[in-house]
Amino acid sequence: MPTLGEMKPPRRLSLLLFAGVLLSACGSAETSSSSVPSGLRPPVITEAFTLLPCSQKNNIGIEGCAEHQAITADKRIDSQLALLFTILDERQKRTLVRAERAWLTYRRADCGSTAALFYGGSVAPVEFGSCLVSDDHEYSAHLHAYFDLLEQGSDSAPIWP
Image (cartoon, rainbow, N blue to C red; front, side, top):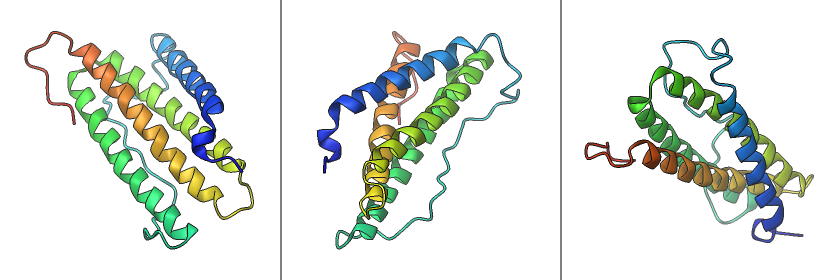
């Protein structure tokens, strides 16, 4: 059975799909403002799972550890999005909200396809959780790059979380 580390080519393809989804969301920002309400607030990631206890003794415990890591990574992304909202104009906020929604859809599909490799086995939810953490870290890096681009050359840029 392949591990996540052995799945490099499909993950690269996933990243290409991720970029396409974000470009699509950003490209439609000016044409459709009705799908995102005015008076925007920063998006907050919510997970559908009930947090399991973390333990390295069995797969359920390892799944719990991955869930805890995903929640921590989600909170970091939430704080990054909140910071971005302090420096973006309304149009940019609408675009970011659309991109965030598209990314969450992508992340669920990406991690679902990874877990599907282990369908029926007790490691499938572990792989799903590990994938969430991995995708969150990649997205966090993308948000940081976006922030750096926005604040390039600014002496008064806020501190990145």
